[in-house]
Length: 55
Image (cartoon, rainbow, N blue to C red):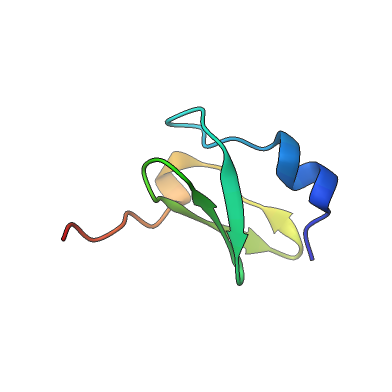
């Protein structure tokens, strides 16, 4: 589980905006990219992110 204080200082590496925790992913509040969490460590690399589907 991600520490609340860590989550508060994390930002999307692409947009530089806030992120939120959704299940087992860290999600950017602006672009919607979903960053994985592996072994309780957020992998905040743009190339590792899931890109949201366009609606």
